Length: 388
Ligand code: GCO
Ligand code: MN
Ligand code: MN
Image (cartoon, rainbow, N blue to C red; front, side):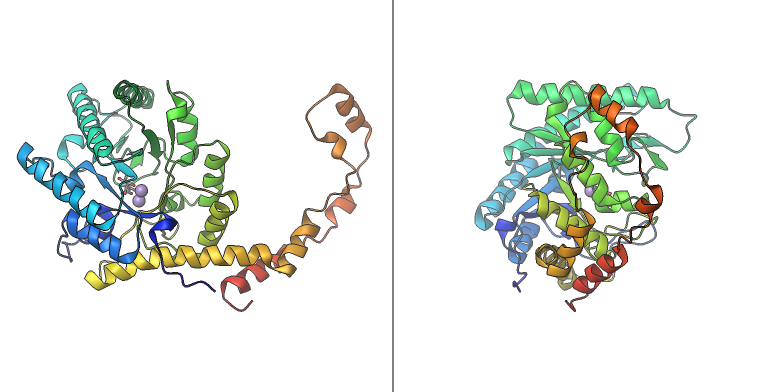
């Protein structure tokens, strides 16, 4: 058994907005004192994180004067230097300010769209200045309450134009920066465009520089829609598009709960970690979550440590699964191949199609096989419950 104490080499990251979350919700006021960005960097270093990510306005308030901005950025850089934390990812807040109430890049108002582009360009400059190699786009307000207000084809075109413009900006500046699109089905808008990771993957193929753009799937966002997150991650991985990942947890179908990783759905979290470890995902493991509103400063640290510990425990469980003789024997049986149909591998040919037509199959025999997935799943559950 390992110690499960996180260290920077495991590449766990948090946003300023995660451990910095003050516990405000639509029904209640903040319950925690705000922490400065410098305090957050030190907190994250204390708990063993590798990096810290931010929205432009997590770091620099939207109405900061240039001198104030420079001081904040200098202090933040000093905290990074003092702790060794890095900034792998940055993003723009295009959802909080009332100017974005009807969207940013997809707003019906060209002035709002231009402002969103300007804000993003400035924020990209700031992210790159602090070392970010990845830039996330979560279109928090890119949606509708009523479809009488906006044509989704116009919205899609505007979003595409904005991303193309920004890709060209990055190329023009010579920045070493890639983009990752983050889907969410709803909240805060009633409907948000491109609501799933799969939708984002389809959209990326329509961009001018698809190679620069991948996805940032989030557990909670696929779970809000009742979907299997690991399957979405696998599709992104298969497409070479898993540029980043937002780890957290939540119950299916609820509001965006942003709970500690593994707090709700241990089995889903296990298969996710197993997938990431089995394929050798080498990107950042970012926790986009926050502590329960019931908790104060100690609870926030327990939350951050808990996210990372659970990941490391599940990583150990995944190795145990891969080494478990009973589980592996079952898997070997399940996937056994006697080679009878290896002639079908390697693609189509007219001869193969001809030969296939002539084959006869015993459907009853095919159906009669007892797959023993019950046994396999129970072994998995017992492994997770710690009795294997
Ligand atoms: C949310 C989103 C955000 C984004 C963040 C970075 O549901 O609030 O997940 O936390 O991840 O804006 O783009
Ligand atoms: Mn979220
Ligand atoms: Mn997120």
